[in-house]
Length: 82
Image (cartoon, rainbow, N blue to C red; front, top):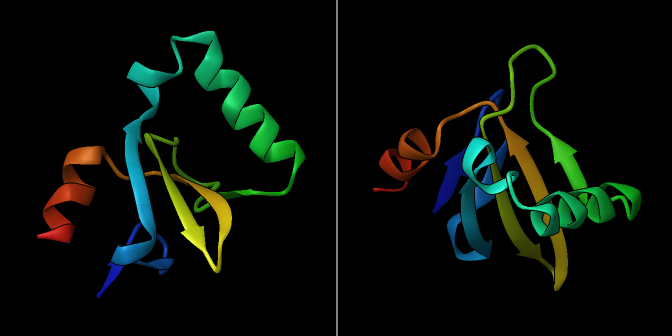
């Protein structure tokens, strides 16, 4: 099964490790460092530059970590999974 996380970007449900709200999680320094490191390593993909990012999804695709920055709320993503 595939999940649309915004602007026609699809990811496999089985590859999802976690879905996180940016407002709540980036309060902690460790989370900001995690995302910054992923950006420096080319593991971070911004789904839409037109809308403010609201969540990030951590995945493993072919044993490689990727982080998708999405304009969708976590509640919207969870509804799409069901």
